[in-house]
Length: 549
Ligand SMILES: Cc1cc2nc3c(=O)[nH]c(=O)nc-3n(C[C@H](O)[C@H](O)[C@H](O)COP(=O)(O)OP(=O)(O)OC[C@H]3O[C@@H](n4cnc5c(N)ncnc54)[C@H](O)[C@@H]3O)c2cc1C
Image 1 (cartoon, rainbow, N blue to C red):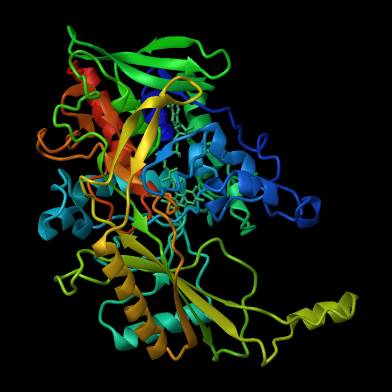
Image 2 (image 1 turned 30 degrees about the horizontal axis):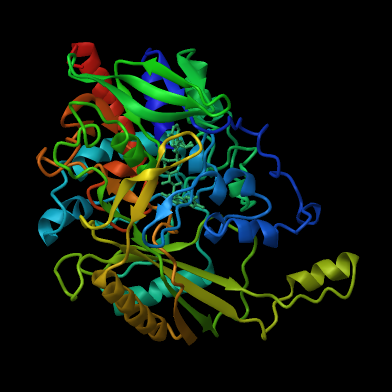
């Protein structure tokens, strides 16, 4: 998702660009084999077979892993890594990466997020603020297509939105109740990367409107949601400046100590296992957080014996993620005469409200949450034809609404949460295996309890009944929002990248995926990765034109 942005920017501005991908090509529409299949056409009705689940406990722990999508997920035994502590590393190794299977939630960061580490005294200060990214969020949103409401909230800035699908009556009811009882708790429409309006830019991309099929993880033949395959990659290809090299695993970056810069990459061909070198003036590293860490750690030379740009010794450290362990469910006895008509590809979103304007809890930072309301219908299907149709429209008093929320907690980047290379074990391409040593801490446990307490109170105030909280015990990584290890900062002694995502000690290498993140905030992060990438690519282009890199 982020690498596609770098490719698009360079290609559009006339640079010969090589996009290197370890996996196979996935062409829009042609390579979505299940996209138009109906439930009864799947041998296992859409569920991944038990044997596949048993053989792939990591991949199968992802909610989107099913019979209809398993071809897009990395299989556990094909790409081994070492879990020093349990870490569910969910990966998609193909052109388009995880942008094919993602859940398309896109919320901007606010200044409160960029100021967080400096204000609350953890990690290091971000070298940028919201104003630096604001125009790039807009730039990305206009190309991607984001459906949302203008909510006017300081904690979650508005963007350049297409019209929303809307919220349902119980989601609206909960929103009204929260306004009544709290000053700063908002239940809003979850902004999502779906086309709800046609505009010339989307027609030019060849994309159509989202039809709310809600099977996006199979790939969408209309291009109704954003993935790199239907947008960035064909867009870059159309310029004639893109060369796409698939089945090529980047092993390491080649550094020239005389020129004092990186000159290219070493790549292993996945079929022949032979090593090939490619040379370039500028390198963008977008292998997704942990693989980007791995490549840099593996890029050793006389000048950088601990990994490229790693004079500080901090490469691979301060990994953080999102705590998705908290879940709350309840029943809503009201709105008995109402039902949900049709479906939508997003639900309601509750931006962070804890520790926003002042430190009010024993833990640092806070959490956002999703909110969804649905009605389980007890349909009368005893007839056929018009009678069946009319029966399906009937709303029964006995049908009740279910509501639920899941927590999206910020974890604090810590030196002890780190990745490193194993000294003995290699992967099938002869590259050292990654060791992941990442875990929750006391701050996360306190935050989880606070989510249970606060949401139980909010649900009670809204009149919901049968309230149940649960800790789903998800392992780190299962949130699929791993970040850090190559963090941005002002000071080369405490960070790896400057404010342009440029390595402090190797100026023609840029890291713009999640590895660059100094802290994680609560929002789904990919929109920020994309905005950072577009900004950094345009900076790199200016610097190249000036002859600075
Ligand atoms: C089920 C699911 C739901 C999600 N929902 C959301 C959401 O709602 N909102 C959100 O913001 N995010 C979401 N995410 C996360 C989102 O997909 C990622 O943040 C995003 O894709 C990261 O972009 P990226 O470019 O860093 O990595 P990717 O999209 O994973 O792309 C990395 C690419 O690099 C390639 N690669 C890796 N190593 C090498 C190597 N050594 N050599 C060559 N190529 C290599 C990979 O094959 C891949 O194609 C979700 C993810 C999943 C799986």
